[in-house]
Amino acid sequence: MVEVVGTAPTSAMFITKFVYRHSWKSNIYNIKLYFKDSIYLLEMALSEQQKKEILEQQAQKNITRRVISPELEKILYEAQPVLDHGFVRVIDYMGDDSSIVQAARVSYGKGTKKVSTDSGLIKYLMRHRHSTPFEMCEIKYHVKLPIFVARQWIRHRTANVNEYSARYSILDKEFYLPSKENLAAQSTSNRQGRGETINGKQADNILELLKKDAEQTYADYELMLNEKYDGTKINENNKGLARELARMNLTLNTYTQWYWKTDLLNLLNFLSLRADSHAQYEIRAYADVMIESLKKWVPITYEAFMDYRIGVLEISAKGLKVIGSFLNGTNISYKDSGLGKREWNELMTKLKLNNKTIK
Picture 1 (cartoon, rainbow, N blue to C red):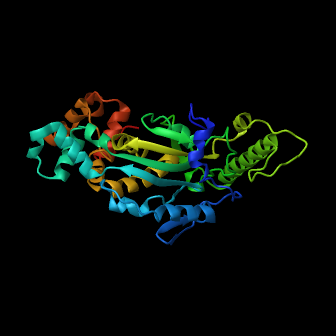
Picture 2 (tube, helix red, strand yellow):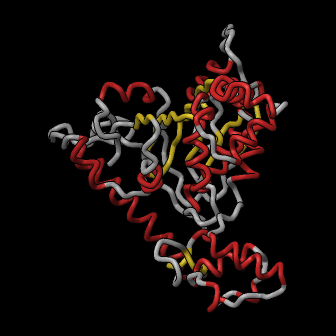
Picture 3 (spheres, rainbow, N blue to C red):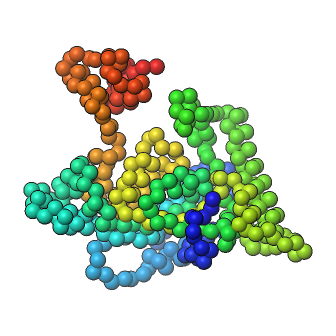
């Protein structure tokens, strides 16, 4: 799938102006970044026209009576690099920390007077999972990402998404190739995770296979279309296969793009899962960049989120009894805890009692 179900070809025109038409440079693992005119420019991903377009967007002077976030305004429209060819751009937003407080005080009335500061109120809301006030803020991102990452991402169904249409346009000749340090064997303890890093000749062979397959399938894609990615015809005497059919041959590391709009509550839910250390590295790389935009947009909410959602441990009733036994000096054993092996090990790791984990 390379477009959202129900997205009409014409609706893809919202993002086709910011499409990337350039030759693919393979085996580039480190993104080169430089700073110019208040905008980060990704040397290998943005053409001069695209750089100009971003600068034009940033040069707009709009007068508004709505609240704005000064720090987020500084990076509005900028392409923040992710992986080898991807990026995240904040396109638009609504509201800030004060919008959350405003909604909460309307909702809970006099009860909120017990919390004198905005920071205290937001932390209270986050701590007790009073979520509705966070829905009052919204943000829109423009994201360029590999298709296999997009398929994970789209599982978060509470956003508005408009994806680049491969029925309407030809996909760019760009593919994700992981760096060697991110090539890992299948985990022996987690069916959907990575284990030890693969090194040496085997790693070189895997990267060569990924590169070769991506290049070959894209060459076949162009052949079926009878058209190069830059628009030139291959054979004037042949008809090109319909784009909606030719796309099925492409590899999942091909890059796509979309506009992704969501409210703050659902963004926090997304980030709590995808910025977690257990999330796949490739989608976690996007979440890490988005957390930085969260920090600039709603700094008080960001602080509360990091305190009460990221890096915390949810403890079951049985787990709480185990902790209580440790505090009382009784040191309950794994066999007597009633916990499963995985939950026990997670608890011991969080408590930095690695000597008590079970193999």
